[in-house]
Image (cartoon, rainbow, N blue to C red; front, side):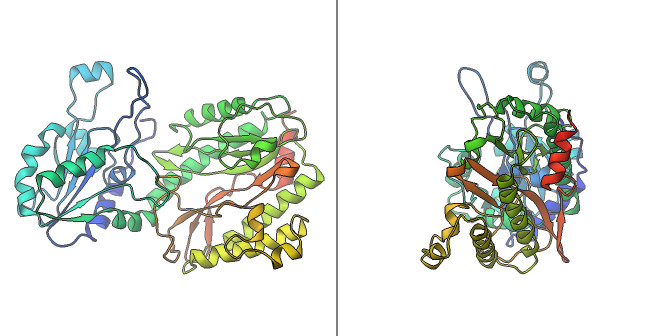
Amino acid sequence: MKYQSIDSSLFIDNRQKFSNHLKANSMALFMSNDILPTNADGSMGFRQNSDLFYLSGIDQEDTILVLFPDVKDGRHKEILFVKETSELIAIWEGAKLDKAQTKHVSGVDMVYWFHEFEKIMKPFFSQAERIYLNRNEHTRRSIETETAQDRFNASVMAKYPLHKYERSAPIMHKIRAIKSTREIELIQQACDITEKGFRRLLKFIKPGVWEYEIEAELIHEFIRNRSQGFAYGPIVASGKNACVLHYVENNRQCKDGDIILLDVAAEYANYASDLTRSVPVNGKYTKRQKEVYNAVLRMHRAATKLLVPGMTFEKYNKQVGEMMTEELLQLGLLKKEDVKNQNPDWPAYKKYYMHGTSHFMGLDVHDVGFFTEPIQAGMVFTVEPGIYIPEEGLGIRIENNFMVTTTGQLDLMKNIPIEAEEIEDLMASRK
């Protein structure tokens, strides 16, 4: 892995947080992700299951984590099964973790080879009353592909049909939503790498460059700073493309007078960052572009102030909607009659601002957490209001990442230029 080693204390603490929520005499099982195929003998590369990484720090395929706090022998409370390395694997793929390295990375003392799972675990299954199985239960999940965890779950339930089964996901969503100090440091590192990429772009963007060239500049800067690359598919959207929320083609030439919306960010050690800026291709906002930009920036700052412990998302989204309505009225995009006659289920402001303002962020860019529960200190959110005006070929979005504290918010992207004038000045300095 490109990232520097993480002290195992993070994963030891995370396992304890999880185990504290287990019912008596329960075992929990976590399976690594597949290496997904492309075509012929190609693969997409490996991305670890976020829950397994959170609990173990093991970042390779064919890994199983077992947590059994009430095990009778007192020694096998935590077990890791990892892929056995060999000279052949070392030659073709690079050596996998050996048992000593696995212990060092994870802090788990009991380590066996992956192929030994059935033999080692049989007596422990007979001791457990309940088995917690993991699954991706993200509210935005719409994946039809059967995962390694899905296959593993089916196999366990078929072999041990009389056990009581529980879901790990509710526990994981609860504990992963509150970030530890070390996690914040890793997210901050991802944000700092993103800053380097953005500052590089301000000296590169000019009329005539292609969106994919901008993408290439970013990936260069990210990887040279120990990131695996983008935390999500990069959106490099100039002109009217900025009004397409999930535009990913990045294949248009940037024109003089356009705004380019950049929703691009780096990951670090599997932790995400999530940045959006909207910059003028020629280095200077027009009067109208700056008018809309500053309206979005006011929205960004006002929404951020609402992210405090105890705030509910229902109330948060309602207040954001009310503030956005006022901004759109001031911009002449809405009329008072539009607001007066609006559909409560789809308010008038949704014509120009149709997506949400904040989401959880962490190991996944759309991280797990409960939107039905009040905000707590230690949670990390994006704040990303936007205004999209297709008839003007103009889309503006501004996004930073914040940790909620007991006294307010910590801006993890505070050093990334955000004021229109600062962006203009930095772009002017490229000459």
